[in-house]
Length: 86
Length: 92
Image (cartoon, rainbow over all chains, first blue to last red; front, top):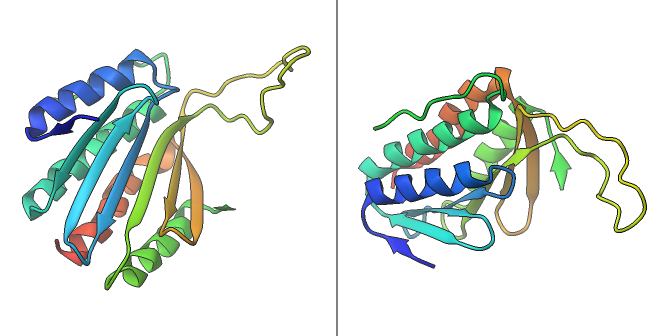
């Protein structure tokens, strides 16, 4: 269960995992206010990618990425949504 | 598991965040959804089913209470903002 330290690496690996099989992948966000940390996990029940942070600046990045993934899931087959690069 | 409309889901989600300020975690799960309402039969013929492509399932829980909603393309944009806006408001 690899914990990523670099955000870029995490997003690249996560996109790859999602595009390999969109129906299998799920994204989990865990937020603890009392400890002040946010964790994002992307998994297809075989591989699991984790990124944890307690930095406020990372919240925005995680939010953007989360929306990006949602956009991909919701896009119709006919129009292939190109992934934006941060 | 309570299935809600988008707005109601957001209200309940905010409530979950407020409840967990002093202790506990909020889990939010996002998954692509093809619109099936019946489980896949173990054997026998698979019922003819048209998989929808443009939906996703959003679930949230605090360990006790569970809520969920289905997002399709129209409401998707507002969601991205709202789900994490609560986190930003709570200020890590």
